[in-house]
Length: 326
Length: 286
Image (tube, rainbow over all chains, first blue to last red):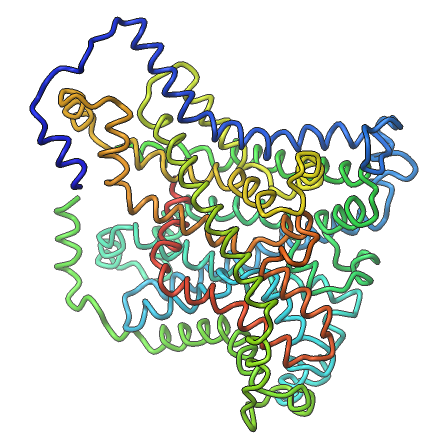
């Protein structure tokens, strides 16, 4: 503010020299290039260029040194040893699908239900909001290790189940190949439901009370109000959350990497596209193959995102932009 | 808008109520589930591995302070804390500086290709950063940035730019044109207006994007995992993973190390909760 005040306190005068129209335009372009240049360069070089290189490398068999020379066409994708022919990679695709669908159908209804019930001002709401958000701010790696210790054989989770008389449910949460992906889904649900809840509570806060009050005066029940007024008005928040959840689910890496062992991963029980990619590309130095997996991960995400934007998000984004500008 | 706000606050007789019992039971249950594992980890650090094995769900008895003390005496822990701080602070500064400059142009300059440039940046939101991580590592290696903090900082700035620009642009576009005209008549150009008026008045929005960048960097794992092979450069998430791999039998030690590793984030969050939550909500609206 003080700086702004000083600028205004100066005597009003014309700019020192009034340049011609062409010079002004040129000057404007200098500013545009000066201000956006660094961001464009960094973004292009470190976010978009790697995708291009991934597509190029994926056509070769390559150990990562020198320039790739052993051209293999699409062998890394669909050849006899290509990703799509590898049962473990297909397991990774299935696991990503389980996490994506599981996150949407568990976290969504859970968070919407909680948000509707908690959508009132109550004492301690600020503290509640703080606590619910804790899992979201902690690093995936740390909560992954924490849960790994809780779920280890004869660990805390097993002891609690035994104390509750549910000992027969105990299984190898992290070792049973049929269970481990669901354990991962449980950890991810714990971590991200609070995020969805906070978003939905914020969305609910934007819905005018008059609408629900008017419906209540007209004799609508609590459930009718939620079903026909609140949830439809929450629609754009729900759709944007779905988009974020979808992109996040496709790139799950950290929790899986630390909470399930490499052996379990390598059998396809808990691996995802991202862990499979790092296991093969980085750890085993199969750079061409790893990059083919990267391209598949990119293509699936990009296609899903574009389709979602085109058919589901379109209205929300238009609306949001006009809101932002006015 | 003011009228409806007044109406709604008037019609709400008691702004803060005790809520229904169901609300409370539910709120308590959700809060308990959210923090129980964290509390368990913190308490577990006060127990011995023997105690943890004998009664996995018990409380510390007696309380053991030595495990935490020994973690705090390790230079590794402090070194990793320092590395995390250097990377997160540098990333945050880079994101805010590059982001606000680009967002300002996208918000207030009229030029051919403006919307195209904006869409170009938003492309970064349509696919996960993990997709390019292998060639990114190779690129960093060829630029001699592998095994340097800069090799983590610069790509993290790049990853964070799209969301930063998406949040800042509508905010910067909302400054009235009259303000800019007035500044111009006073002899201030567009750059002067940006520096002297827009930046000081945008502090709240800048803090929001800064906090988001800081948290993202602080928790990052995949990029540092690939780029930082040298353990002396490792950040806290990598350090926690190293510790749990090297001391796999020492459950109490891992819990203590992990709890201490979570502390900075918890402390930071309790101070910046408003910005984090507000920033995420702003990001979703934009």
